[in-house]
Image 1: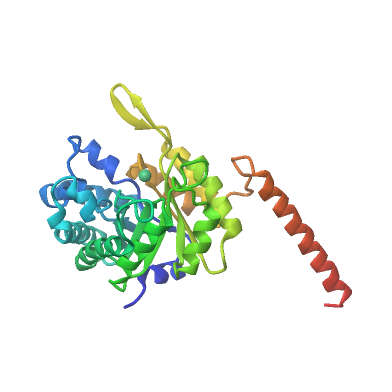
Image 2: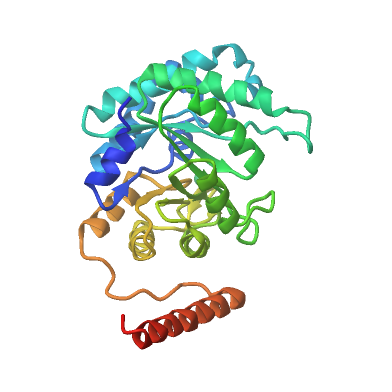
Length: 330
Ligand SMILES: [Zn+2]
C-alpha cells in the first residue's frame, strides 16, 4: 500500500491539517449530548458541509467525524453495535468531499476507560476495539489513521496495535494540558522518544489550552526529537468562554495565523487546529503559511531553566567540538 502521508510530506514542506469537528457540530445544532458519529448517517449533509468548509479553507487533509467512534464511547449512546458502520460513513463522506488530491485522516480518540494496571481495560481488549474502529475507517477510504488527544502511552500503544491491523500509516498526537504534561504525566520529550521507538514518524500535540501552551510543548518536542520524526501540532483556538449563553473561543483567526507561523519557525511540518476553530481560522492559517516565514523567532513562553541550561551546555559542547576539529586540521 502506498503511504500517501509520507508522499504528501515529501511533496510539501508544510502540510496544513483542518480544524474542529465537535464544536462545529455543536454550532450546527448537536446540543442534546447525542453521539457526533451518529450524524454521519442522520445528518450527512451537515458533516459534509463541515468537511467542505475545511477543503475550501485550503486544508491538505481533512479529518473524519469519528473521534469518539470506538465501542466504549459509543456504548454511552447505546451505539456500540454500529462501530464499523458509523466509522465507515464518516470516512466515506470525507473521501467524497476530499476528492483525489486531498488526504483523509481517520480520527481515533481515547476510549474514556482506564487501561490496566490503573483500570479494568486490558491492552488486548483496547487494541481489539481500536482495530474494529480502524477497520470501518479503512473501509470508508481514509489515507491514514490519526490517533489524537491521547494522554496515556499505554492507550496509544493499544491504539497503534489496532490501527496497524489496517496496514495504513498512523500519526499520533497527545494532549499536554496539565502543566505541559498529559493528564497521565507524560512529557513532550517522553512522548516523542517513545513513539519514535514504536515506529511512528509523525508525532505531536493537539487540543489543550491554546497556542501558547502548545508552542512550549512543541518547542520541547523539537529539542528532544530523534532524527526523522516529523512534528505535528493542532492547537485549540484558545480557551472556551461563556458569552451571552454561548461558548466562544478567544483564539481569533489572526491569533491562529500567528500560531501557524510560530509552529513553522519551530520546525513543525504538519500544522492544523482543534476545538473552537472554524474554516475562517484555517483560511487565516493558510494565508499565513502561504506567505513568508517569520524573520526571527522568539519563544512566546518562558524557556524552562533546566532546558535553557541544557541548551547552553549543548552550545558550549558544540563550540568545543568545533575548536578541537580546527585543531585537528579538519
Ligand atoms: Zn480539541
